[in-house]
Amino acid sequence: MASRRTVLHMGALAAGVATPALVTGQAFAQQAFASSASDRSADDRRRYRRPLVIGHRGASGYRPEHTLGSYELAARMGADFIEPDLVITRDGVLVVRHEPEIGGTTDVAARPEFASRKTTKLLDGVPTTGWFVEDFTLAELKTLRAVERLPQVRQHNTLYNGLFEVPTFKEVLDLRVKLSKELEREIGVYPETKHPTYFRAQGRPLEDALVRTLREYGLDRRDAPAFVQSFEATNLLMLHEKYRLLTPKVFLTSASGTPFNDPRSYADYLTPAALHDLSQYVAGIGPDKNQVIPRNADGSLGTPSSLVADAHAAGLVVHPYTLRAENTFLPANLRVGTDATAYGKAIDEQLAFLRAGVDGVFTDQADIGVLSRKLHLGS
Ligand code: G3P
Ligand code: CA
Image (tube, rainbow, N blue to C red; front, side):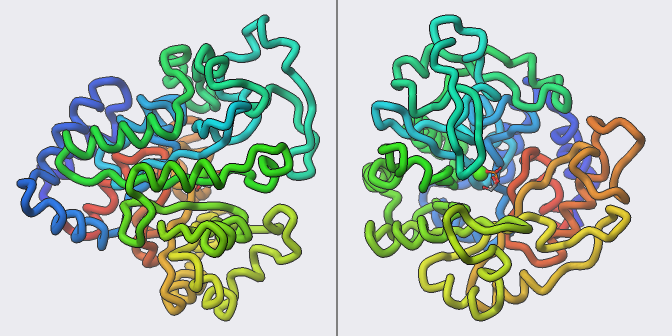
């Protein structure tokens, strides 16, 4: 088990959601991973054998998602990977947002100069109204500022509304390089192609820019500190077969439905035989966490499915999404009190997934991921 002193220190990290957590997180990262340059790669290899802490949209529990401030905080809290979702501008630049529609995470609705850009489009078959990233040049997008997506749940994060730009993918990769040097450990990057079929239909495919950028940054290799993820298996197959991209790939799955424009359901892709087929072009799967540990009828955490064992038998790693500390996202038996926005037993949830054998977790609170892993491993 971790020493009481360490646990108390990391508990403080988990609680420290304001700017001071950034300083404390930096101290922790330096303490935990301090090493000389000569043995750093061996350290990195050892670290990658542990379950990974993937900073979901950065440290989105503490900062508006997909901002450089969010990614930096996740890295300083000890995340092994930072996770940018990728979309593309009118002039073909990859930028980082969770979806093409940018009204929910920027201040575009308050900008009269862009009022006429509001429109309705079919996004993966769903009529969607708002402002779309592919209708903005990068220069226009850079005049906007990020805002908190979930102000009702994460009121604290609204403190940072208006402080951060929408980053380009290259800015995230530059930040990764800078922080890896400063923290003396390799910070991995876990980009997701968002709605790749949609963007292709809009005349702005993601793949050319993605592959070009990964190559420019030396990440097109099997041992790159990177995973490319997508909810569309056909997109990953295209990156593998057509683009010959070597970067490890991860297929994201939903608990129901099918990938867009794909006759096969997610469930079909997760049978033992299908997992073996997937392993010809992906390194892992990123399932909805409820596919790993389903919930009981009363909403409490159930018992693990066979998914982790099946995936491991096919040689695939398993990185479920998304571990979040607030009651509203937790199983019924792990909630504390009645305030949906208060923290529940988030460490217990993470420990349950680690005990189920997952190889990493996407989490909005990287500090809680680091603490849970330490408790799980006992060091
Ligand atoms: O990429 C893992 C997880 O992020 C998938 O869900 O919707 O948060 O991108 P989403
Ligand atoms: Ca994602």
